[in-house]
Image 1 (cartoon, rainbow, N blue to C red):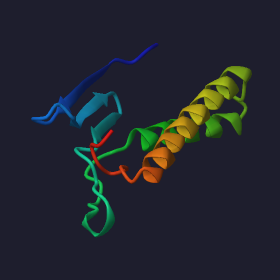
Image 2: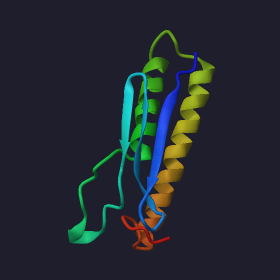
Image 3: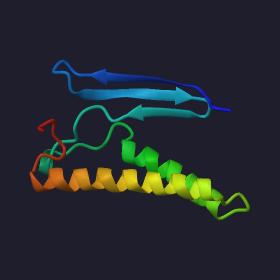
Image 4: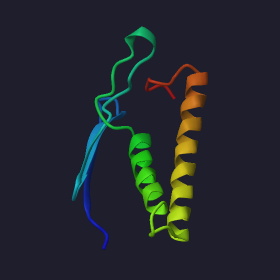
Length: 106
């Protein structure tokens, strides 16, 4: 049975991603609102990052895989989640290399 979720994605006045939420049975995700900045002006997060939510899902599937519910479908799902994390980590590294991570610069 697929559970339903309600999602709202917000933009700032310039059209940049500015937080939002996803809520469903047993979850409430408050997304990061705005960039963190760079250097000494870097702010603490005020919401969840996509990477953190993907890692939480991957952790749960790893838990299943260590139980009697281990199966090929879980392994494939875990493979895809880990690939998603690797892609997002590569994006972050690329942005860091250009000194634009933590900003709305492209």
